[in-house]
Length: 91
Image 1 (tube, rainbow, N blue to C red):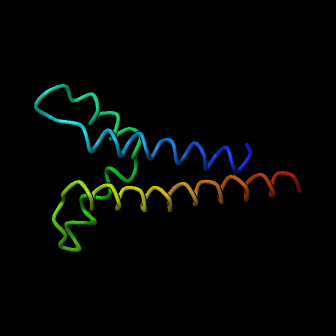
Image 2: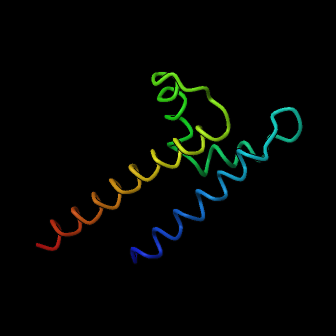
């Protein structure tokens, strides 16, 4: 897979997830929050303990920023692992 396509998919997933989290409501139709959870995974899971440990209030802004930062790290490690495995198999 081309790196530009991979990171393009990452950007689209993060935008959809951030919009879902920012506009979702647990009191009405929780579909947007479910989409946010899926598209921002694993950052959507890891952001809550990280923000709690740092002592920052968990509002929309810090949650989205932390989720995206965690996802950048996870996706980068994934691409690094995939390229390393491919290089090892080709040799």
